[in-house]
Image 1 (cartoon, rainbow, N blue to C red):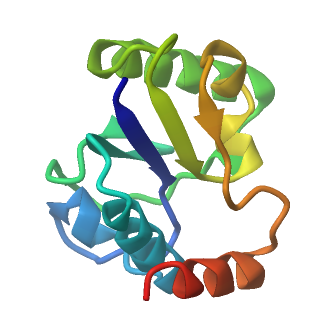
Image 2 (image 1 turned 90 degrees about the vertical axis):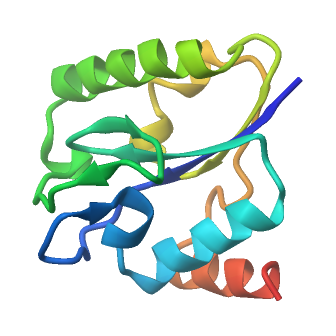
Length: 137
């Protein structure tokens, strides 16, 4: 069984092409990525509203797209694409998937993943940041 961490993208980005793990520059993303690495997972991916499932080393262009402005059909389609890619990278029945991502990013993913955890569930942004800071010391 592998351990895989999924981190959602954020709106605050560099204004030039960069690796996915570097392009997102919000404090919340930085701490989520640091926390993900501290768990020593087998893989970490970023859930991007534009690009879908991203390898953190993949170079991407900055963009201004969010699931928050997409309709349900668009989010479902996005989720299907993410699940198709994730299923090539992991075993959705056996692997442990840890979400560091909001409800909108998880909504259509979690019903198709058997073993998942959501450590930040129910926490507002400020409390998420506090939790991540406390758990990455």
